[in-house]
Every structure is written in C-alpha cells, then in structure tokens.
Length: 150
Image 1 (cartoon, rainbow, N blue to C red):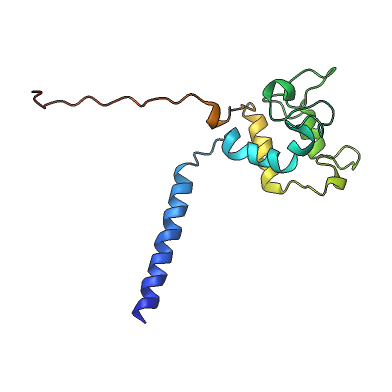
Image 2 (cartoon, rainbow, N blue to C red):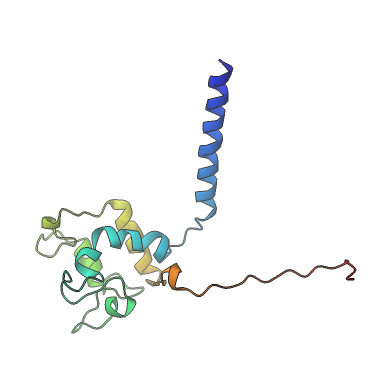
C-alpha cells in the first residue's frame, strides 16, 4: 500500500514540475521558434519551405523576406495586418480552391494552431533565426565583493 502512495506522489511531482516549467516559459507572447515554426513545418513547409523541388508559388514561409515580399499587390504575410495577409485569408477561407493547406494535402490547421498564427501576425509576425545558427554568447560574469585576492 505504501509503495502505491509513494508512486502516486512521485508521478504527481513529476507532472507538476513539467507543468511549472512549461508555465514559466509562457509569458503570453508568441515566439516564432517555439510556437509558429512547428506549425508551419508540419502544415506548410511541404509546399512553402526550403525544398526547391516541392515549392509552390515560389513562396517560402520559412524566410521573412519571401513571406513579406510584395507579390503584385499583396503579401503572403503582412506583419500586424491580418486583412492584408493573403496567407491568413487562405487559412480561414471557405473556398476549397483557396483554402490552405489545400484539402487534397490531408493537412489541417486546428483552432489552436489558427489562433497562434493569427496572434503572431497581429503581433508583427516577427521571425527568429534558428538557434543553431546564432553565435554563442558568454553570460556576464557577476562581480564578487568582499573577497581578498592573494
């Protein structure tokens, strides 16, 4: 009986710790790398990502310059402006010929994913480089007071 209680307590501690660490990094703002990139990678990069052979409409949603480029009077993503963002109008379209991702891809955005993309565009559609390509930075070393150096 005690081992069952101990196991239950251990599981409770593990899950509460995982929840706390997730809550600690969630300040309410949308992060491209944390929130948006995984959605685009799952549902959009097949046709609008780095692979030239599979790319449609010469559009890369993994690059800010391509996503916000003027495409003859419209932009796929216009930071801060949902109505002027062609990608958003296609995400919420009722027309199967305009809907993104297209129905024949069998890829779909759920309500939470749509809400994340919507908020990201409203907040300015800030892109972030992949962490692996950022130069390492050394943290500031705190000064120590009150120690005698010899």
